[in-house]
Length: 327
Image (cartoon, rainbow, N blue to C red):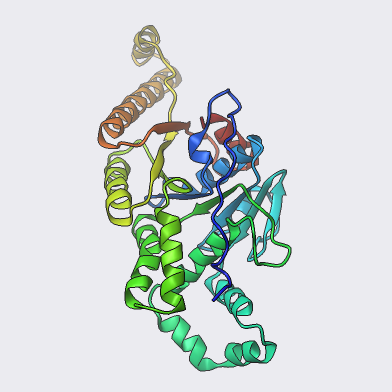
């Protein structure tokens, strides 16, 4: 059976980074971004897409939880299940499993009457909803289709890089394991074959990989270590980069710190308050640096740090700043 999962897997051309360095983890065809909830992986996914476009790649950011972060940051209407150009060489799509299933059926069944009959069938709707992991499987199938240079979808663009904003840690792991689960359940037939093709894509370290996003805090660092082990040992997917997000930059020297401590003894209450705030900031930065050092000792993948953005909401200028920091 030829259809959604029948294209050849192709290698993208390696490109040199803006600073003369090769950003090897952006040379994959598919890059899954995951991490503990609240670490900023959606923002990092968009920043990676912007950076890839800066490198001259045609990239698309894929949201699988209908969060519409891309449309919010770029101040556009909801993206939905369509490939929307956000800026030069950068697109976005929000994948809904029902839309993925409908597209899959449209590609598989050539007779319109049969397609219409299937879509109207309550039994088909109930079966799809009651099958564990089916939503994840068809979503990965759509991701796989987006990464092909010989696409089956009408007017489908060709992308150099597909960046996938995965669900948080636990769900993200089960998401990536769904093709293997279906391949084991369906011992033969087209579902087995297609699930094996998707599993092969995820396990192909030359073309697919993951980026783990963390924060300079104890629990996210611990979870990053565990997540790296699960991804490499249980899922057999490459972990190409760990990104430590939200890191405060060191702002005071030793001499500065001595002066700040003197401010805490000032007779002026406002000066004392400023001194306490500065000391608190120094302590927080020191704690974050300790967590960064812990992370370096716990994970095997290279680590990139991104600065904390002092804004209540991340906008396009913030995302571009983060993109410039990725190297």
